[in-house]
Length: 597
Image 1 (cartoon, one colour):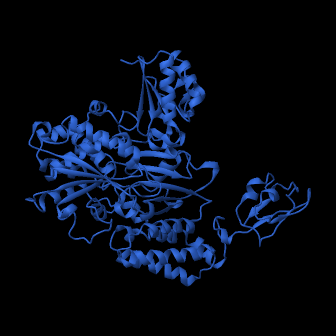
Image 2 (cartoon, rainbow, N blue to C red):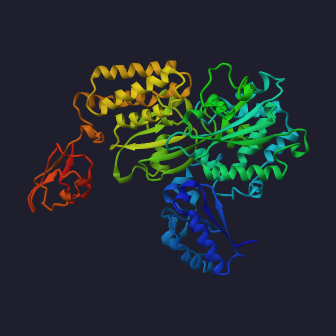
Image 3 (tube, rainbow, N blue to C red):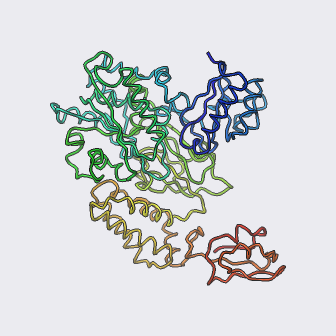
């Protein structure tokens, strides 16, 4: 038995900040101080507070160290682990109180969260199946195989109200029911997991796979039993090396324990899982394109019907759910449909994981009950907007979603409410924007992404998104007319109505939502040739205010184009014909003499 456990985040975010070097240094210092039999160091998954990484938690005290450097480790070992004195300067400041250290669960970031899909992330060693089993792992699988019929399993998922967390929000139990009943005597059925996660700024599924891979394996086996399948595939992008490695370890361990393979739990049910790595094509997040890719073909969508429940992978009945959807399944089986349905709203049950990014203090991973307001997420959990700036909009659903303006900050987040205001849940990316963001530029960014990621199979998406991007580019350069704006809106509805798959059908959403709520910015770009946020370079000009300029020459010295002239101690000027609009002069000026307008 160890007297202390030190948990270090081994997710991608903290790893990129150097957590593996911290892990190695910690082991070295523990060995050097003779603590190897008293202190255990564990690499876990994501804790959620990614902005504060690298992160380390010491139990049983629950001391939360943030932004730890390798140089800090000897002090933590000698003071905390040897002498029992917490190194206060390294502790996450919100947990520091006059009388000691308060629980992390009492902080603003965590107290409004309710972790179901993320329940084991940051808690267990994801590479140790025994730790997963110690947290009730594989009990749900044992329960369904020994106590429930497939129909009872499906009914439980139906009663829970669980909807797909991948974007569309289709009822999970209904999907399983169709796959079981539509071709009941099929010689082969498949269970697939979408771990492709291509939305910019989204990392929910990656974090679950890195922190709790066994929950997905267990849920897929339960799904296989429910629909009558004996083979599963996890389609995960190759850009997630840590997730891939931990999935490989988890599958190997589950097979060794007899939890995957033949005659699981001594029953006649057999189920195995294979990994398939995606090359990073966004379109492969669409279910039929994903299955086409697993089959070894170019990842392109297929027309529907027939739907995958009838003809999916290798033309056999197939269900496809994403990582977060599966992560809810074992808990629903163990705790009951009523427990899950008690959380959330009438039509959107349970919790939702969001990846908070952009202009917000607490970037990271959060899991909240459906129905939580956007204001709560941004101002309380997210810690508000940095530098005293005003909230302008939040982009949900990535390239498929839309922008939610400040006027809708008090909307309850669920599937139907977001669709009603022109956005969508998507997989769970939530990018926050402040007053310095140009909404035309944001729409252009997402359209550029969609144009690059279109598979090109259907004309409306292949050509329509390109034409939409060209018009947005004209607007940001001040070369568009109001007729171009009308043409852009018309194109949006045409592409939305006629594209083959969800990529093209939702590609216009960022444009339509910004037109709906920020049309005045489009008008300013077109009519006034002005970018109100000061982002679009072609519409900017830089000026030096003579009354504020001290003639220090700092701006002239950093200008890469030699556009600034003037003598020492006299006001300088900018030659606008030479100016590159790079902003280097503004950054260097200590007197606030340079403005852009």
